Image (cartoon, rainbow over all chains, first blue to last red; front, side, top):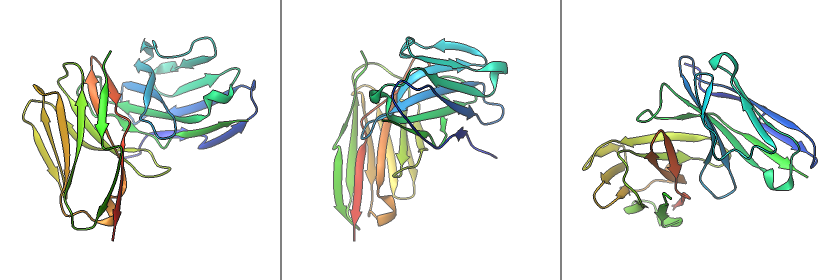
Length: 114
Length: 109
């Protein structure tokens, strides 16, 4: 069974440029998460989707970050414009449903903003 | 606000030794997760603990949960080099998880 797929794996951009990350969850998983992981820290939730609905986006900086999950499968996370402080690893995870289900993480996208 | 505290944050141990990593959390929760992360890699699920007194074991790792004390432990028995990684606990809160800062484990020969 294929795991969570993310692309690109690495991205280097200059500040004020836009950037987008893509995630394909495990087939059949209705819940999709985007996390931010800073160096030496645990992941922090940015947004959670149940199918195509964003049910928890309270930690998403909405002035520059946006996300979508069209058709309840793939998801895209966008930053526009990027700032130096956005340099981090962006992780996507999925689970069959919320709550007690284990979340399965993708390899992440490592973003460096110069 | 839920706080999840792991200790120690850094752990260097000799092969063959035993040690315990602690995960304390500040509010009621009914589920606790342990993940492993190798450098530059993503998180791998180790254990899901869903009830008070739950104990799960896989190889040299054993995890337990005391919901009354709001404490989970990850015990390492007879450590080997392959266990070197960062270990995260995560506490279930509503429909989400809140992660600790991680314990970076190094097992030396």
